[in-house]
Length: 363
Ligand SMILES: NC(=O)c1ccc[n+]([C@@H]2O[C@H](COP(=O)([O-])OP(=O)(O)OC[C@H]3O[C@@H](n4cnc5c(N)ncnc54)[C@H](O)[C@@H]3O)[C@@H](O)[C@H]2O)c1
Image (tube, rainbow, N blue to C red; front, top):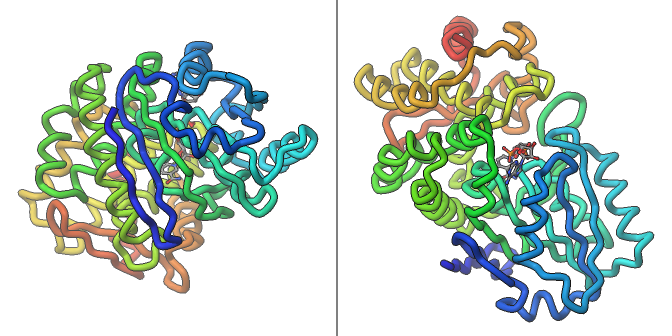
């Protein structure tokens, strides 16, 4: 097991434990677990039985009463209604400010359970246990919590760091190929925004992660999680621009996800959002042909299925990007790229350029 401790602006020290096949994590963090009067394990109703079994190996019931709360699958979990149901469940079962939530699941589970943990009694401790590839390299780390509103992604949310994040790559053994590919969409992002060494690791292991190779998945989780934690420690609340790099590909990606009615896996939508950003960067004269070809090849390597779920409605797309949180008063705002690791936030891009990138991204 590898552990990272990082201190964020709120002066909280957060620990992330990374490894494969870990056991009884509770014993290793007595301050957190002994101090809790009750524990609620939050998972999703469609997760395989092996997921719950592994979660209980990590956090055995012991003397503490364990409670279980099941969320509906994927994005259906990320609603204010579900957050309210979880808070009411905690209240009905006597959960106090000394209680603990363990969120074990994909990014939808950790986003929603983290959100509920942040508002229940004005904030209780939670442990993030991402169980998807995407969750372990990104969603389950960093303390951003959210629910969707009005068909748009992550409109209401909080910053509430988990007291502990546990990435056990043994969870990934049961992931279907579509979820490995979705995670690889975010993996490609790291190769574009991160330092050269991270880019090398991703390039080397990308195709192996798609086929579920255990050591490649563990290597990528370890490298990406460490990099994300570093960015979060420097800019916890996304205020200085450092953390914004993690949103590369996400403005268009979130719009594609919304335009699919939630049927497109998040990482696949992000991969198309990255392709959008690469084309827009080339068309804006920021990214030369050679660099474009090199970066675009990483998206090609994902072998995305046809964008059948996304409505090819450019007007709708423009409406969604105008309402993106980051756009503020601009008509649109995208993070573009000049070369690997050199990002360039751009506002009010011309409609013709956006249309070209939109068509290219959905090919
Ligand atoms: N908070 C953040 O910083 C952040 C960052 C990136 C993404 N996100 C959010 O994360 C969400 C996407 O997360 P995701 O890709 O994990 O998708 P997801 O949470 O929708 O999970 C995808 C599917 O995988 C299943 N699953 C989970 N673990 C499994 C396992 N071990 N074996 C088999 N099946 C398993 C789930 O039940 C679900 O059906 C989006 O809502 C996105 O907005 C948040």
